[in-house]
Amino acid sequence: MSLMRISRRRLLLAGTVAAGLLAGPALAADTITIGIPVGLSGANSVVAPSVVQSAELAVEEINAKGGILGKKVVLEVADDASGAAGAQKAFDSLIFQKKVDALISMETSAARNAGLPIVNRGKVPYIYTSFYEGRSCSPYMYVNAWVPDQQVAPIVDYFKDKGAKTYFLIGSDYAFGRGMLAFTKEYIEKTGGKIVGDEYAPMDATDWTAILSKVKAANPDAIITSTAGGAPNVTLTKQLRAAGIKSLYGNLAVDEGTAKSMGPDAEGIYIAGSYFTNIDTPANKAFLAAMEKKFGKEMKTPNDLSVPEYEAVYAYKAAVEKAGTTDAAKVIPALAEVTVDGPRGAITMNKQRHAPLTMYLGQVKGDGSVDIISTFKDVDPGEQCPKLK
Picture 1 (spheres, rainbow, N blue to C red):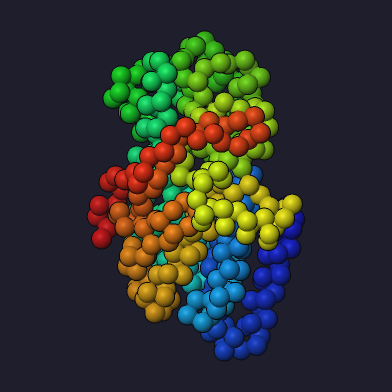
Picture 2 (cartoon, one colour; picture 1 turned 90 degrees about the horizontal axis):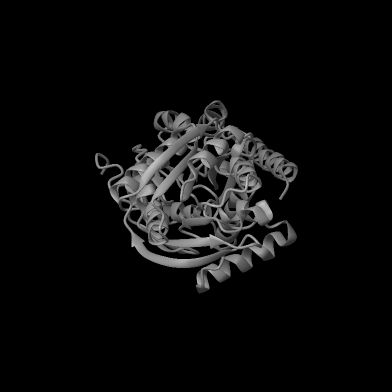
């Protein structure tokens, strides 16, 4: 789906909401509005369209079955520009102007960190659906995606088994990149490996020449990267391949959709995640069939950033129905008590507002699909938010 088409849809949604306000309070009372701040521009623009599509499918399915508590569900999409300044505007608009009932979104850590104070002030339930560096906590936020405690070990352990002893780390210079690689560095050293270099570039970097020169000089057994999801993954991988670097390559931030967009450059990358399109379950097959039916040729590849969005909409539905209301004070505790059985399996956000997840280690093939090497059932997220009940 093009960003132009998303913009048109947002205009239509805005018109629908405006029409509802003109029609009077009865119509507004018959709807539940979910806000989706997401990076339609900036680093996340490569993957954001797939996230919006997943939310649209979930809402369509829910409305076809009577909505939530008999009310129609409406989406409000806002561009956070993948960063802090854009997120502040998007969150403020959605919470205080659009008066959404909940926020469900995949965002960069910079955007999330900038939006959280606004969430806390507005006291709105917020389900964060992006894998991230971990240990971000709020009384109003739940997370249904993976953290490094769940994702790093499968890659590092596999590289160690293949004989890797030296590692070079490359990341984007913000919370996600540094947080992921700090955990990775600690894990590598704890398991006997050695870090021979770690370098960071701005979140919107497009030229990795200087860093890749250092990689070639260090000649590591393995490279592990953690960049802002989307565009930086594409540019870094393309330049890494062009430089002729042959080290084992583990990427902590690339999703399957972005891998497909890379073409042959993505072949051979090792990734670990909670979702790949070839998970062989009835629920995943049904989800993929529904996506293809709804979007046809415009369908963006479902991935580990978009599928949690789909499941989170259903988690919010279940929590509201359990609470019997959209009142945040009652929905918040219910979010830890409900389970969604979706494309990734049964998921409950009951571990300090995070979720145990089945994780997969995979290797990207030439066509961008992922060959699953190993499966790790119900991996615990570890200590994330111990001070929150």
